Image (cartoon, rainbow, N blue to C red; front, side, top):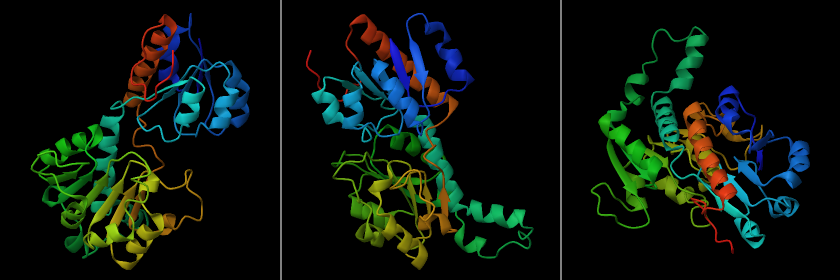
Length: 315
């Protein structure tokens, strides 16, 4: 079985898969290396997909592919309809990256809440002393905050457990009232929260969900954190809120366009903490991904039912 893995492996990945080489031929390709991708695509039985979009045109060239396996949960970067039409199964890995993304979410919360990038820059420049007196007016303990989680899946629930242990009050919203005491409608959650953290898939219903009207409901000293998908936030409206005092800060791992263009105004704002869509990317998550991916490849090899398939393919 030939797998086209759309990432560059480290030693731990190759070591993990070394015992499978008698039946599994994994060919690696960097996400920005289209030459290698299109050279290997016609030979692949399976694609291990990370973030680079897989289009209908790509799938038309994948003449042997039977499975596109997302390394992660969100399949918005795969043309699932085109895959279904070609009889290609699409599977994901719900929950596999939850521990890492939960920790990354907390990292962004704390960095924004404690003004970490600003203090780092000041210290490096020899300007950290005497201490900025505004710290005592603006920096918060997360245990003294109300944190609102928009979306309440496996990642949000792990974030909630960490925050509760730290003393925070945690609210959440989901598609309907789930009977939990922290449930709020979105408008109420935005208005009550000191920190709002997004944990939603990108769909037509969630695209642009956090726009001018939603941002206007938030407290002017609140923080927005997004580790889900960039287009859920109206970036122009967010930039305006951060510049004009409508919002205190933001912690962002995802963006409307990735890689982030050099002229994105978010890159110029001192009250924004940025990471390049990597809160999921740890050695622990990669091992879980490989375990899921290997299991489904074995199932495909043996003619058994695949797990976590998101589309219906005949036969």
